[in-house]
Image (cartoon, rainbow, N blue to C red; front, side, top):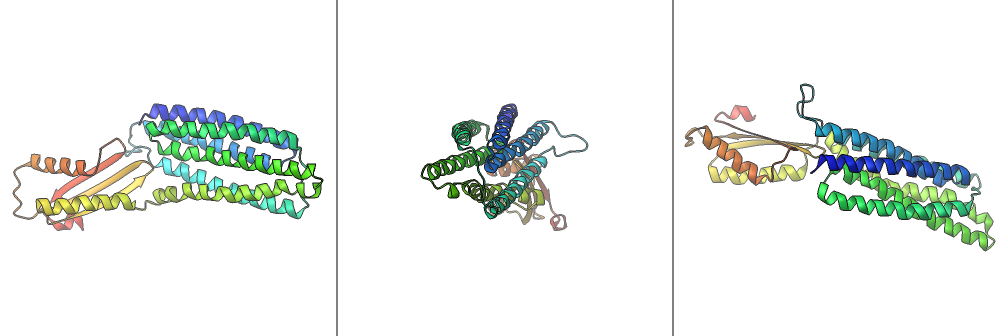
Length: 301
């Protein structure tokens, strides 16, 4: 994966999202539409999250140092946890705002302006979402994958706004103004509920990584490889530990050799390491693999 390409795409995404945020906030104030104002503030928060992601991508590209000897991989799930938490909180805020809007009798808005806004940004945001997804097929960046969720959410918000405002325009044209005023707060409620699944999609894996919960898929893979190696090479026993931080995987394996194991030298142990490493998959900069051998079971207890 090209970190330079990752940083370039994140920077581009940040600038464009900031432009969307400004347009939404200005349009929301002018038209009086709380749903569009909410859309603008969501985009503004997404912009700040993208800045954090860009900083994280730059730090990950740096080499480890005395203070961070395993690099900066641990920052990636922390940033994603912040993003998911913001999405969740802003969804709750929007839901309550919509409920109180209905209780207070709805809101009058300038439909012509908001329809143009929603139509333009529906096209822009969906186009950019698919563009980023296409670019990330080559980059394979976790940061960009989750960052792109904000574009999908924003595009879904714009579609919801467009459909709802067109419905309000139809109601007004048919003389149902008393119902049209409830469209804006109703949109807020629907948009808030639609944002919860993307928020949990980001929060769940990020929280697992931050808490250091062993990834089941990686743990099963390591155990499968080691069980086969144990039978093939006659190991007495082994213990394995795995952890994941963002895209970084940490694997630690300790092998117990029998007392009469036909050991011909260190080169034989290195060959075993190479074999196990190859069976675990392609090695890359994000995989930290430690394999040790011992004849005393106490070292794996």
